Image (cartoon, rainbow, N blue to C red):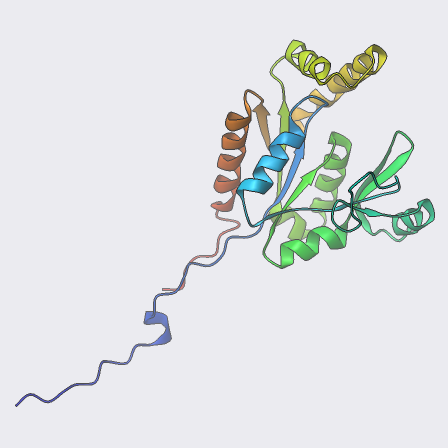
Length: 223
């Protein structure tokens, strides 16, 4: 007669455990006007559930349907200035008379909760974020910067005109600014020459996945 045997006890390490989560990323995307940045960012947010947009502070008035704390943090000029003076912003700038800025607490709070964070900012803001990361190990470990642009100035101009929202002097001004911005592409980790929305999204997704697999962000399993 066989005696029943109790299953052998397993040590905690012997139990199957999910692999450690990759280090969350701070993904900075910049592009000149007409480069396709807004569309790309929205597609990434729709595709990646763990990716969250860093909500920006602004001094401009809310537009129809915009909600405070959802679309922007709407601040008066005095409150915005106090935050600047207190060093609360990771980056900030004034555009057409209105101030915009990204709070350090907004970015770091999401990263510390394990979320990838998306920043849609201009090249000046991206430069400020890169500089801040030099003295902040947490930001440095997470930061990935991508520059997106049309492959030629003619295509960029065609996209601007297709929008039909700007007068001719505005189009020419945007093109002049775009030339200055495109010259900064070498300061970014990656360059995407915009072709189509699916292609741009596929390339950005490939960058994100590759960055998550880098050894400096990975945590090896404990065998």
